Length: 198
Image (cartoon, rainbow, N blue to C red; front, side, top):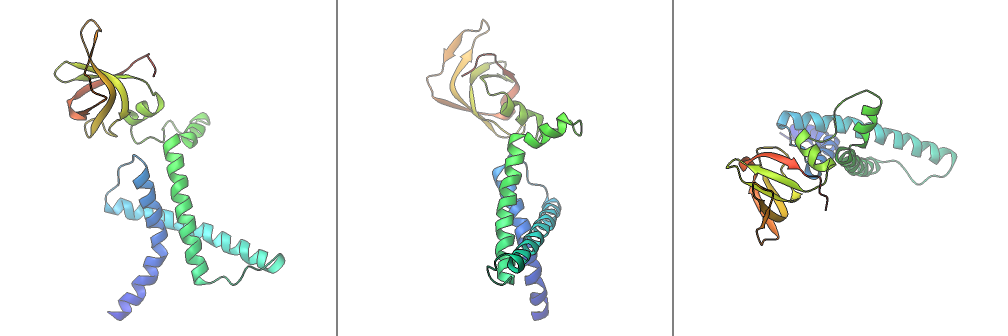
């Protein structure tokens, strides 16, 4: 048992930065967590990238220590601290790229991909076109308002509309008298993005 513990602890110390990066990414983006195997694969990929960056940092600092100025000795503590800082930075940078579509937009401009960085087309429409919406409900009623929050998937979660009002067939608005209105996504048949902006 002691031998197993001695082998597992260094392995966990090696893998924890990758798991930390994956946790940051899935905690701060709208992407669904993959199954356990998928999470492990992603953590391993992040671990590989982190270890490459830490290796480059180590080489750079050792070179600077020999040719410029020495900050001290490179130890296992230095490596662990560098791994943690790189993991946090990589997690934050991954979130940034996933939430603003800049990388995918650049790749689309180069005809490398047609995809966006958004988890679904549904989510992308709400993110890229901020405007009032009309929710067409399954019971044929319509509700109009500003979407503060919306579900990542079309059939799961809730919409939170600000300044909601019911829409009559002739387009007349009937104010609800509420500041916010929450409705389950499963009750929405389709969403209409209006021309009118906030």
